[in-house]
Length: 137
Image 1 (cartoon, rainbow, N blue to C red):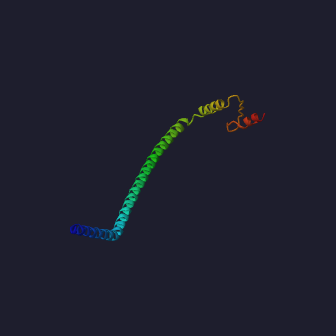
Image 2 (cartoon, helix red, strand yellow):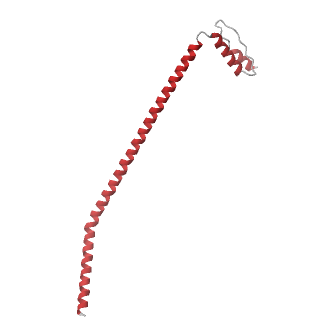
């Protein structure tokens, strides 16, 4: 029996010592763990912020490249329109009769069912006010 009481008291002392060591360990270890945990959390947030910054930079670069390509396409289109206008302008020089014919055709095409009266003037241009007179009636 003596041995069993001695074993129990040694076990009890060991349990108390273990509890004291555990409490002391938590008292000193927990604050250090909290500091370490906050440090890791900060590092993770910093890494996330840097990654988001890189994404924003890449998106901005993509928008810049797209804008440059759209501007180049617009310049090419404008050059084509300018050249087409130049060709048309050169081909119409000295063709006043043809231009007058096209103008009359456009007037007859757009004025279906209306009476258009052409009144010659000194400059050879028709007076367009006659159409307004026709609308008042």
